[in-house]
Image (cartoon, rainbow, N blue to C red; front, side, top):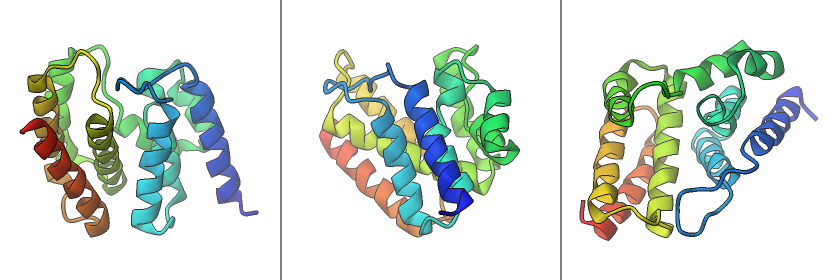
Length: 181
């Protein structure tokens, strides 16, 4: 067994434990870890599994934002390269949601290739989830706004990975059809 595979398994275990009590916002209330594994699967398929740092980033991408995990803990467990990638895609939760969303659109263009691929996979998973199981309590307008916003974030991620972009485009079309965005 290669060391990369061991690290990937440890990242999956850590992510599952960190998000153990969390559920997706959708009506199905699926375990949050499903999102993390879907993002990672999208990245693995799009890159033929060639970048274990990116795959670990996929599993861990919401740990700093949504759990009590720390940057230092990620460095100690998974190395500085993985921790830096997770930090690069982490929103500043001290800001209002509208500001965080605006900054994602503005700043994604200047992010690393890995961070852009991760954003692309994350938004793909989120759009798929919206279509399968929209969050209860979200209005049609809020759903449409999310679809439009996700596409705006992904716009600056184009030209890096055609297969991953095609998967996003399919999810985006389905979401637009479902919500009229």
